Image 1 (cartoon, rainbow over the protein chains, first blue to last red):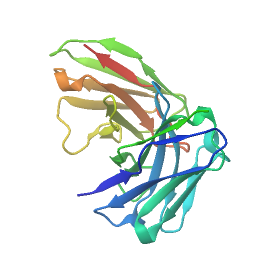
Image 2 (cartoon, each protein chain N blue to C red; image 1 turned 180 degrees about the vertical axis):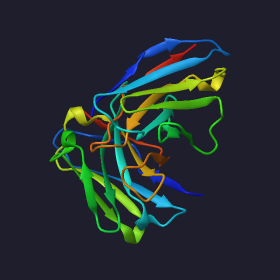
Image 3 (cartoon, one colour; image 1 turned 120 degrees about the horizontal axis):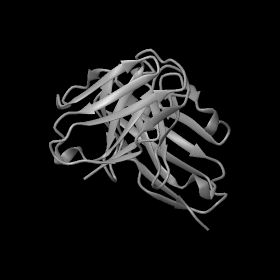
Image 4 (cartoon, chains in turn blue, orange; image 1 turned 90 degrees about the horizontal axis):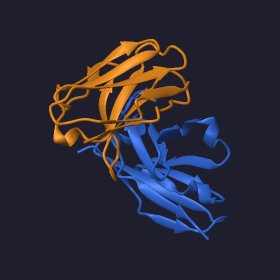
Length: 121
Length: 105
């Protein structure tokens, strides 16, 4: 079964760092891009960007440029989303997702279950 | 590219035909997808390429349109269809989503 499994919920303080993960299984991890989508409480979906695990090529939304880092470790079939200094406004559910095909601009067919990140003093 | 969905919410009954529109701020050919999201769950892909039904999705869902104007139609609404629906353009980075349409009872 093709699936993405994300790490568990996190509660952090402003200014702290955080790295959440998304592990793929059931398919060749290095052949498909992995995207990240933010959903703030009670709000809609926001496309953050996408990473190609084989060479870490990245496409990122300008809205998230400079604040988050995408990375991947193909040896463990896992993609990561990282913050160096969290803000309260980073409080949201974060989904990872895999496109239908090997192209980065294809619809997201496979989704992780989401990781809730809460940033509060 | 900005996507504007309308309406933002609607009330419907089981058996109704529901139509949701998505308008792009510039032409995106047929590079549009539709998703369904239920509370506390990840989105689910319904349609890609503006009109191609994803495998396993009931045929009561259909999509149409090209260029800037798109439509998601649900024929004979079922109880399990009450959810929020999002469009996403796949033409130009960043691959933006519409604001969502909540379908309520």
